[in-house]
Length: 199
Ligand SMILES: Cc1cc2nc3c(=O)[nH]c(=O)nc-3n(C[C@H](O)[C@H](O)[C@H](O)COP(=O)(O)O)c2cc1C
Image (cartoon, rainbow, N blue to C red):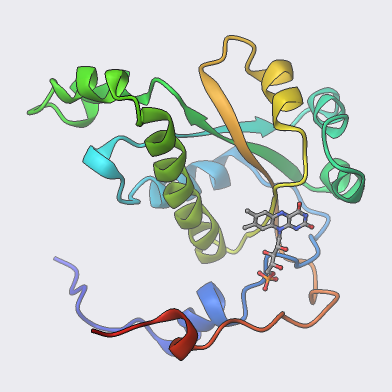
């Protein structure tokens, strides 16, 4: 059994957090399917409500698919999306509850509850977003870098790639191997006193 009570080495904290940027330029190097599978083996461990796991990825590998995606990116994001080693549409499965017999075998009744809850769509997006946070950190752990982008037309991407309406886009993420320093220094992060209250 791994001892999970020990802090990981400082060097690893630098790689995962302190030195990691989401605005790092990419090296001219392919991201393989093997790397995406290794990454999935890590990010899929993210916690979600009742283990619902709604995150879905549409990997845009072919130039033809990338061009279809580019049409829906904002002007500021289009060129980098077309040039990135890989672009991935980060989406949520609005019927993720259908997997309950597989993902929570002792509680298959969760399927109906999740699929019929009025708040399911909020919950779906929220839980997929938690999973995406893990995706970003897992990518750093395997030597990749992720550039998330909210600047695109959601309705356009959904009509283009998810016409049956089951998956809905949340973000587009460029993924690659780091290829140098970020162009600008890291923006300040809020201090402890601002973001934490103790009662
Ligand atoms: C939800 C989300 C949306 C973002 N949208 C964009 C975007 O549309 N275009 C862009 O260039 N960067 C985008 N970013 C990247 C942020 O600007 C970046 O993560 C932030 O400035 C921190 O940069 P750092 O991780 O390098 O410190 C987005 C990040 C997130 C998490």
